[in-house]
Length: 125
Image 1 (cartoon, rainbow, N blue to C red):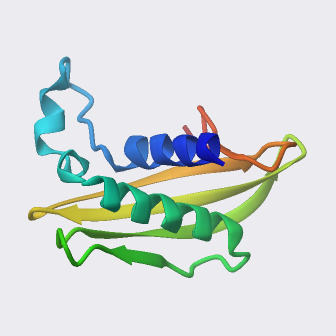
Image 2: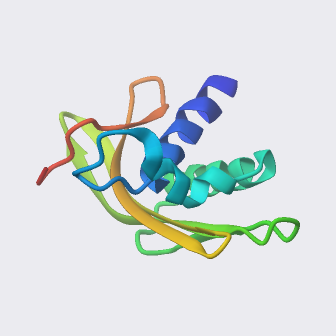
């Protein structure tokens, strides 16, 4: 279970970080909302991703909000498809922290063991 949370947390981190193509160092992280996430924020965001992947209804946002930090976000399954014999879901992840916001879309595919992983090269990229 911890490994699943770690994979989901990494997926959330990768999805929420907005990196300009011309960035050549890590200074972009200074302007990423996830920079300000607390452990509780990460737990809430990861749970939202897990819920959005498990919910069969596309287009239904799973929202999270931390009243202690004021940070919030959502995970929304945009579509479900089959890819290489696996069920895959395109997920839009949005977040806000300290006046910054970010949005990213990634393709998660379910592995034979039931774990969801981000595809390195989603269709259309």
